[in-house]
Structure formats: C-alpha cells, structure tokens
Amino acid sequence: MQSTSKLSSAPPDRETANYLQVVTSLGILIATAIFLWWGFLFLRDSEGVNQLIIGAFAIVWGVAGVGLLYFGLNRFIESFSDRIRSIFQPFIFVGPAALILTWFLVIPTVRTLYLSFLDSNSVNFVGLENFVSVFTDRQMLTSFRNNLLWMVIGTFSCVSLGLLIAVLADRSRFDRVAKSIIFMPMAISFVGAAVIWRFVYYYSPPGQEQIGLLNAVISVFGAEPQAWISSFQPFNNLFLIVIMVWLQTGFAVVILSAALKGVPDDLLEAGRIDGASEGRIFFRIILPYIQGTLITVTTTILIFSLKIFDVVIAMTGGQYGTEVIATNFYRQFFINRNFGYGSAIAIVLLLAVIPVMVYNLRQLGKQEAF
Image 1: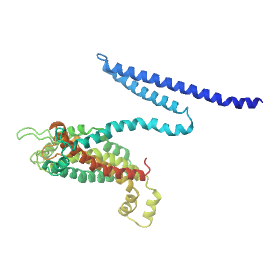
Image 2: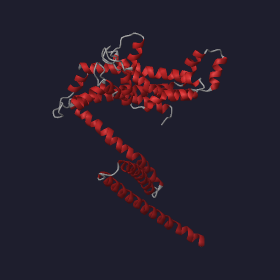
Image 3: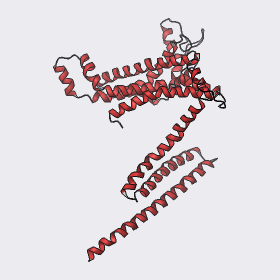
Image 4: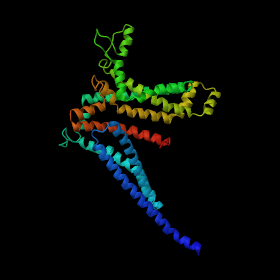
C-alpha cells in the first residue's frame, strides 16, 4: 500500500516541478527584458560618461543579456514534453540568427531587386532597361574585364603560391615560423593593406626624392621611376592584384598545409617503393587526395575576387582603368544617386557570386564540414 501511494504521488510532484520551472523561466525572461531595456536606456542617455566605461558596460550588457535570454528560453522549453521540446528548441538557438539574416540580408536583397526595375529616382518602372545598360555601358565592360583579371590571375596566383609554400614549408624544420610570417598579412584589413602598398607604388614627380619603395629600388639600378598605378593601363590592375595575393596567400597556405598533413604516409611510401618520382607522387597521389580542399580554397578566394572593393577604392578610387563591379555600384548608388542602375549592378554581382558560393557549399558538404 505504501509503494502504491508513492507511485500515485509521483505525477503531482512532477507537475509541481514543471510548474516551478515555468515560473522560474518566466521570471528570468522578465528580468532579462528589464535588464536589456535598462541597459539600452543607459547607453542612449550616457552623454558625458567616460567612453571606456560605456564600452565595458556595453560588452557586459550585451553578452550577459544574450546569455540570460538563451538560458531562460531554453529552460522554459525544457519544462514541456519531449515532443514539444524537439519542435521548438531548435528555433530558440537558430531563430535569432535566422531573423538577423532575414532582416539584414534577405529583405535588402529583395528590395534591391525591386529597385533595379525602377528609374534613377525609384519612381517609374523601366523594366530591364537598367540591366541592358549594365551589359552595354563602357565603364561596366571595363569592370567586367578587370574582375575577370582578378578572378583568373589573382585566384590562380594565391592558390598556386599557397600550395607551393605549403609543400616546401612542410619539409622544413621551421614550418611553423614560415607559415606564421606568411599568414601575418591576413591580420591586416584590406584598407590597411592598400595604405601600405600605396607607399610601395608611390611616384614622386621628376626632381623630387622617390619615397615609394619600388621606385627607390629601381632607381638604385639606374632605371627611371614609374607611375605604376596610373600608367600601363590595363596592366596596372596587376599591381593591385599583387595586394590580394599578398593578403590571401597565407590563408591558402594554412588550409592546404593542414590538408597535406592528412595525406597518409604509407600511401606516399608505397608510391616511392613502386619507383615513382617526387613529382609523380605529387601530381598522382597528393593532389588527388587533397582535391576537395584545393577546390574549396579556390572557390573561397574566387568569391573574394568577385567582390573586391576595399583595395581598389583605397588605392585608386576606381580611376586609371582599375574600376571593378563593386566600385561601379558604389559610385552609381551612393555618389551619382542613380538607385535603379546601382541596384541592377548589385544584382548582377549577386548573380555572379551565387553559383560559385553554391558550388563551394556543396564541396564543404561532401567533406562533411557542416
């Protein structure tokens, strides 16, 4: 009889525990909402307060607020049955990210597509007129040519140099030091890198001292200084592509070096026993084995070269025949205020990036990267 009474009292105890958990969770959520609102008011009305205090408070307020919000919501969902929990729990963790992506990515994309069918003032419907202009305008054709140079020469140089350095560094005792030095430019912003390379390519008029590194070097050997960026069109784009190679080769080296370390030693040893040369082993064993990683690195850098903007706008502003698709979009939309034409350029750039991005995601999926 005693055991029977214990069993009969179990469900009410469980219901009481669930009730307390729901109340506690709601209390945490209400307190979190009050804390977030109070913090927002403090930051909004914090004139005259020390900036370091404001920065420290913003970090604590943001991290603690988001952490409490997730904790309270998760605790609230866990008070329900397994079936309800399995349905709603993923939305707690994925939902905020999905909302942010929708608000800042999906909605602006749809709005940009809508604007691309309107005139410069976003009033009258012009159909495909803006897209026709994109593919017939002389400046846009130059941009397409320059982006093609960035895609082909820049991507090939980054990947080939990265693979070569990765192979050579892995055979050296100082591989970590070498890879760290090559990876260091990745820590510099694109604008910062452009400022550095402006001093490399800087040209002073005749009669003045050449402070540009490249001109100073060639002057030592008796050559005439050159305006590297404004002359030699369209080959001056190659001097800008060098900056991307300097920035992105370190990324390729690190990723490809990790892939090379995953090649089984017994597979390489078997090739050497069969009499294969090092070159044959590299092209017939190593490259096919790391093919997935090689394609992923290539497509990632390819996407970057399609969207290149910072380096060009900081180095030349798109002048001297160096304009690319992104700089033309910036000039038309934000400077000329031609919203329809600028939106059409943005949509063309998006359509150019999407196939490469989809292919990249498929390759990552094959490697079970996500």
